[in-house]
Image (cartoon, rainbow, N blue to C red; front, side, top):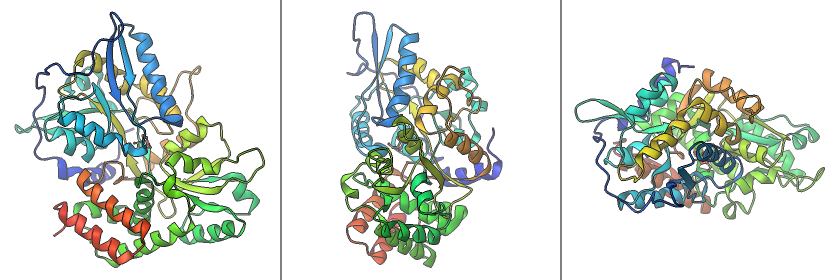
Length: 447
Ligand code: GAL
């Protein structure tokens, strides 16, 4: 499965921003404090992720267990830091890396988050040897390779992290029984969404569950609305400077966002993303769930599956059919990691078809390695949602997620989140638009 070139271009055009100045690699590592030996004869490999719930934790534990069983002298431990989308982990990781005390490996989104934060400033070793040894330059799609790699000052391309999954951010999940019982069809446009939402409200069901105690969860709703209002090219242009943030279409999107937020649960700011997703699950068989829909990335499928909840349906977020709002998790090798040989063995499993087919069936994501997708019959299989997503991934226009590190620099994402936080507390469209215009200027992309 190679990405068609038009889709590669969409990804490249947005990520070209980061393709310039890049570091050299392989700085010798002084001893640090992580990766120390644990039990006699067993070397600890400390890995940090933010996967603590549902399918996230189950999938990562499954692949770690496999590695530890196969390598009795090594022990990978997951020092997970709770907080969806890395809302707590990312700051902690940056501190550790900057202070020269990184974990042996850590979860990082491909694209700007990886390249701007860690690769360009020279904190990571390259993984060219692993890519060559495992044939990954032909096994990962070109659009993925583009955003885990960078050129050094001599113009030589190097690979800096190993992609483990591909996620879709723009999915609307719904409780099937609630929809059927109320004669509703899943909305493909925002107008249809409002019609369904009014009917649900009248029945005392919260239309849209949101858990934005990490603001990214509501930022993702805005991301989907911008995609639906501007289309794939228009949305991509927001991050390259070719779409005008002052335009009336952006204003339309922000007005739509304000309206959508009036259909959410009142306790949204105290909930995590997974607590909100759980609002679609009835407390007992036959009971009415607290909410009918949630707009969330497809780790929600992992959450539902993990909880044994099968009564969920899905559809592209309204107005975004055939557009795949993409993000991907990867793991790299910090230059100051202690046990580099052990990390490389772990990364080899993460990138392999076998490893990806252990992890992804739990996670809701699809494998990044194009030779994966066929777990052994005895193992956990891909869900109906994931089989659908695999087909969409091949056919859709690909756009990068802002909230999950792909579309823009972490600094720009931070300014966006500050603006969205104010908006959720005090929904003023003009103020939000002015802040987003300024954020693009501050990122050096808009004039
Ligand atoms: C994303 C991450 C996913 C999932 C989600 C919720 O940023 O890429 O793997 O973990 O956050 O935590």
